[in-house]
Amino acid sequence: MKNLLKLTLSIRNTPDLMFSHGPIFESMLIQYLPNLRQFDYTMTHQIIDEVSIEDFILWPMNVGFYENFNSNWLHIYSLPWPSNKHDKRQLPIVEDGCNTSVTSEVERAQYIKHVKITKRDELVALNTRFPRASQITIGFSIDIKLPSRISKVILTRKTRKII
Image 1 (tube, rainbow, N blue to C red):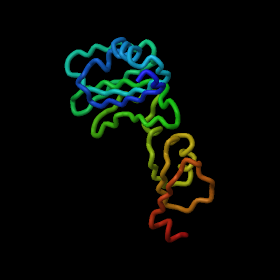
Image 2: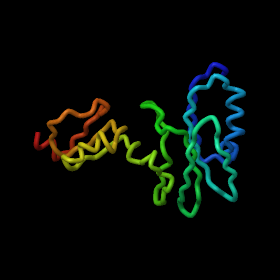
Image 3: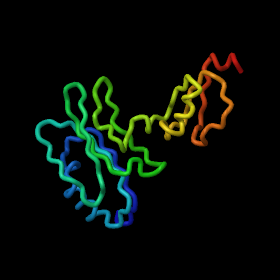
Image 4: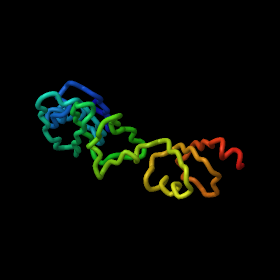
């Protein structure tokens, strides 16, 4: 795959610590993908004992840690996040746990695709807080132009009675 220019890797819960060792991983990329120009990366794995995290040199990465059911997890992701509008990488969402990997560069709300809107003033949040939302569920009639990325509007029964 010498001619590959863009690579996106999303690795979940791998026991292989090689994916958190930047210099080794980058040396493989250099060896097998010499023309690589864009590398979008996200990786999570459970921290069992000691984890050796070596910084990536060629590709800027951010490291986050989170806790779920008394287990500690490591999350490494490439910056910028997202790299472009087609970047489909997602943060690991922790149910019934505490996710402390959410940083100023990455907020969970940025990656929500379906938003339920209950008040008129929440429509402004589509452009500011939910930039990836493509579907909305709404309980009232609207008379404004929605962002072009909104491909589906779901009307609740209450809205259908009004219209």
